[in-house]
Image 1 (cartoon, rainbow, N blue to C red):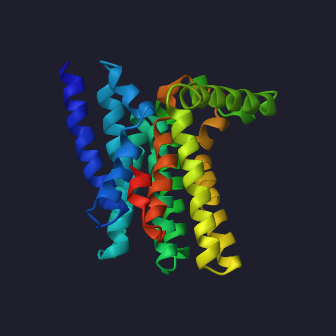
Image 2 (spheres, one colour):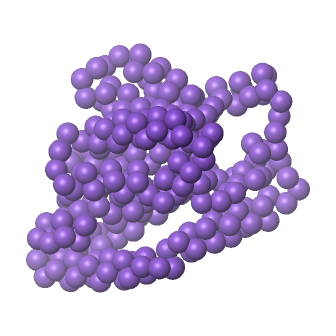
Length: 276
């Protein structure tokens, strides 16, 4: 299985650049965030495909690399060439395996959240990330339109006679795929533990912080997770043939990773234990 061995090597490189995107911190919490984001069942399932795994992992690598190029410009290289590299990398990811391009959106959103929590202005960065993504999508669809035969797999629900029904069907498929995993086995116990930990955090926050700030800190994680859900899984809702199985939602790990990511900004003693 040479292709799968090379896929594993590419996946290792992806983990390195994912950690670079999330920050310079080299600690257990950041490592856990990367592990949950990358080594989730939806993504690992793609490694089971002998002939497709390599292209899928390379698509993931270029999606993360596009985010890295965006962050590289933020830090110390104010050159438009990094935006070009980001657009090109995301375009390659689109051409190899479209579902993995959502990793760019999810990672970029986590970085924007981190900048916001650190008091950094994010308006310019937000506009640039959106511009990079829209530019890549535009170039990709222009290439498909002029050089490749049209396929209904890439058609949007707006081209159908009943777009609302198509959207509802895609949502049902998504719910079914997520429920099959997270409502069976040991996952319900993990979810229950997370809920209990969250309630303990809220109660602790109410005792040590002003009421308004406590409410904000209680609501913020929900808003962040909901936004990540929309960014990483929402685009599939707009496709005529949206989700075909578990392997179509490899970026779902970012939703869980965001919870661990936020623990860096929570002054709650057993946060590492809860993260593990």
